[in-house]
Length: 242
Image (tube, rainbow, N blue to C red; front, side, top):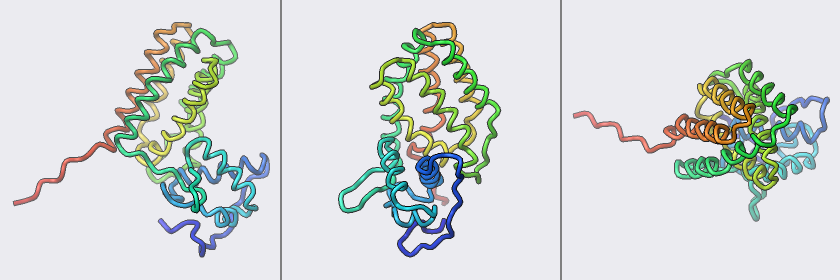
């Protein structure tokens, strides 16, 4: 992969769509650079170089980075500016999932008591869109994977929102920001299982069954870790011939 956004890099400008607010499009573009690992985990984000690459002023880039900082995907460092968040190691990923297991089943439990018809319809629509989303191959990039990510986030965020606890919802959203870095860079063969597990969560929520909703969410999180955790687990050394 070529070095990206070094001070002497001079890539041609990218074209941003005009249908949305500029800062939203810049946010999406910078998020894509992070998810594609064009900006590597732990690397400094050169604001001026990103602005040149996107053919915009530095201001919307700074605004996008402020938003990404609130989501935990970049961090502001003294004397360095913004740096891309490093990937968690195996222990860090386990800790993240432990936190998810504490928070998200409780959010599902509470949401089952507060679910309205509009939210139930949105959840069903999200599951349907995930089911029809294309499954990317190993060589595809973030923009090809965006639909699935957006619907996965939408599903979990809707549940967190219906828990009617702003602090709980905020904690869940921040935790989940890290998940897609792992999914994009390590695994693409989880989509069908994820959708099936979402369907079970939706079924429990629709029945207004708090225990079943919490259990379905917990199972989903446990299964998600089983899909990702072994990738970061220490691997035994290959035997030496002879």
